[in-house]
Image 1 (tube, helix red, strand yellow):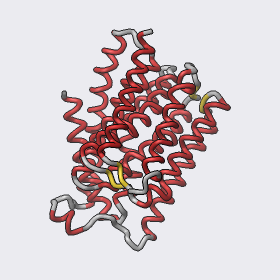
Image 2: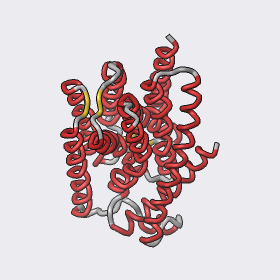
Image 3: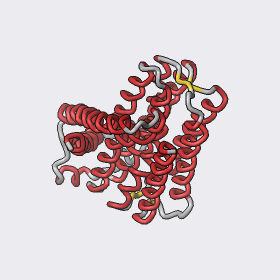
Length: 315
């Protein structure tokens, strides 16, 4: 219970700080969501993956990231859309989603042909992430419409904060998310281990759920505040950060290997499939939104994925 409370209030504080910071820096909330908030909500995945690789568990390092990306698209976007329709900003469909698909395909290419992520690819992932982030910021600064947020509306809602206070809110929100995720994951891990479940299945289910709760809390709160740019930007950005930042940084410390073939043959294939399905939702119906019905479908897909893994663990 304490873990969920920390995650909820951490998400609330993080969203408020992020929106205010975007106003102060004249950068759109979509860019803030794709960069600052995405990196912040991906911090638990990074902590888990680093700890796992230091403990010689590539299964958890990879499984946590892949499972988290699955949870972000199916669980996080699904629940968020069921609560409030999620509008798809033009920048998501024109650049950010294609880059997400590129990062997912590149991960599969590296895993399939090199059976893991070496230091070289770790550095490559980080370099690509830096280029992506710089492009987003420069593109936002060059845009005539520098902020997608109505300044008066923010002020009326009491969201506007001083620059120092905005940064403090971001930092404090990250700390709350980190410890909230830790409490949740630790509790779930103890239960899973008592049941004798493999580390891969723990990673793609328990860990990925726990480390995706910050994204869930942040996106839901952002959607409730009508900050659709932040809600969808955080989700897409987090999946890109999970691949390029989490796996990239982790591989710089120690090479990540595929110890369990199911990570590539099942979990990765599931991840790329739902990433393509997200593209169908974005482009296929030309309505520029994820409806409540589609959110429900995404949630069912996530529950099916969890049930399949639980069934495989029981066999």
